[in-house]
Length: 191
Image (cartoon, rainbow, N blue to C red; front, side):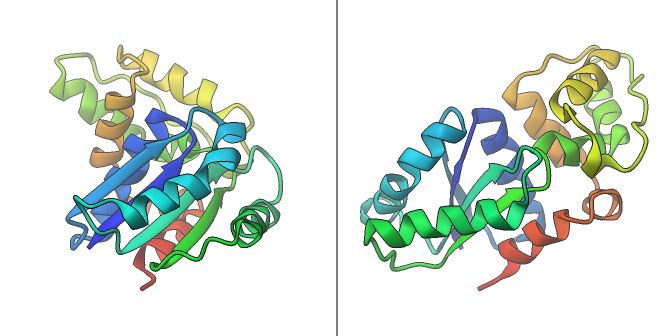
């Protein structure tokens, strides 16, 4: 199965594509389209869906459009994205799912400090990341908290590191500490 994802930033693309492959072992490839920020995502995602449909090198079986809710109601953000697609008049030949994370993707990475420490070990750094208390999905500035966690382990806040942490993270631990993560899992498994 080939997934297409449209996301805000490069770090989001690394994390989501890695998590998709962990959740769906049959995901042969994830075609990533980072847009730069939420404003650009809203403007560009329909064009990226068209690109997924008309690209000749691969055939996307399913697409996910994912953005941070930034403390807004995730369902209303998802509904807004769905309205934009309907108003565009474009009808993709593949299923499209919309997801707004409860806060931001860094919230999920904060759920498993052991994954950060594992990446630190692999990179020859001191594994010293400390756990962040619950409830994670209510944490404001999760991106700052995650960068602090990376700093504790002497890791740079680069997209590749975000992807490595996602690869080392335990899906069950994320789901336990971040209940809204189940929405992502459900949408990845659907179809």
